Image 1 (tube, one colour):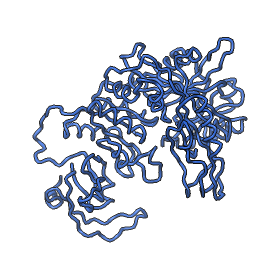
Image 2 (cartoon, helix red, strand yellow; image 1 turned 135 degrees about the horizontal axis):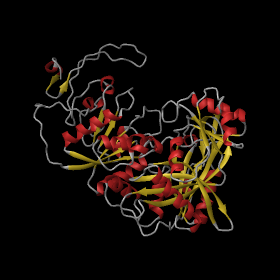
Image 3 (tube, one colour; image 1 turned 180 degrees about the vertical axis):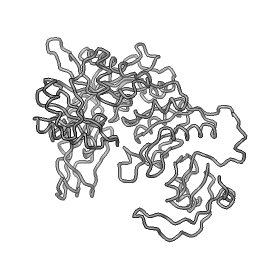
Image 4 (cartoon, one colour; image 1 turned 120 degrees about the vertical axis):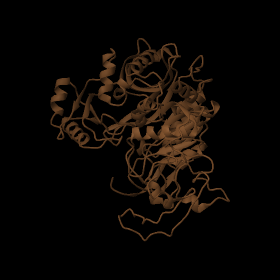
Length: 540
């Protein structure tokens, strides 16, 4: 603790008189000397927000700084952060207490997934720690990028965030979690990614924590980098789209690549580590392809990393599908398709824009080739535990009455987005996807129903924004009026800026419908057609 430890700490309190550094870099007058104590303390407490934000955070459940119940000390809770390294009375007294509590780590969760996952963990008596690599600074949607407080409110036991202003460090995170294991007498059994960006970290973090249940580390990059992904799938003997890596910052290598691949326009130009249809462009001519490739090579990708190259690919024809799977050695073939979704898209704004996504029967012969192909892709990129999400295109063969010659768009070693797992649990009797995901990542045998044929029709409807400006009023957002309504999320509200919808986060909102096929189809059209926003015009 340093030579001045006695001056800094009195019991469990910290005296802090250093000036606060304002965002503009100005030094404010020193705050009055404050002494704070709180029974939720694990390590040290801070009397100012600036001091607290400079340290890694472990926010805990129970009587925490986020707990504003009547009768608690508001001053002590206002700027309270908890660090993993506890001040101990005798640090040389090394003990190995009995394991008291099994636990799991979830990375980068969304609120809807948190609620479902906590319920599954509770049934198994598991302690849950959430890791948030990029904390919400207050300017993002809570449902998709929740704060530590919002995650704790779902029932998660702890939340780890990196220090304010610092980038997430996987080794530092592992060190903190190992400290938690030793201090709180818990044992981590599995690490689960809950969104695309978390796939980068989950298997590595599991290995650093000494957990043997994780996907093939040698193929880790092939589960995120779309070029390496295609290489791995092609090496397994499965068809992939023709593609080339482009590195010229002026796009001068585009024409040669297109000619060597013998591609015809339109072609696809995309970032290599994208997500949510971000930075994916359908280019109709050479000039546009050159412009988009140069733009990507010089940019930072959706995952926050510098894009070292762009990809140019053939434009695949046919219908687009998402095939969701669960992987576990306890399944007959190592992987099991759980649900199939057909995407409806249209070409606009230089990309393919979502209209809605409809659930299909994975046991129907119509989709049998898609199912087998998706299973092969999951094996090819080393997915052995947990969920997988394969996106592909295929052409329907009228003579055979089934889809033929599927071709991969991409694969993700994670739970499908868009609440698809939640919709599957509501339409497939006996299927509990969050239970299965948890069991797979912990190495437990998973339970699957005898059939994954849905008994109801489910649809994920994209509510578009068709204009640009600052929202004044919203019309038709009372989606509860729809007979088959299940749930919805709005991404815009009066006073916020909207643009013409292209990628997922540019939509005004989403609606989920469950019911009879005819009723769901009718309500899907009504949800889109009767929605509108009035804006104050602004340049896009």
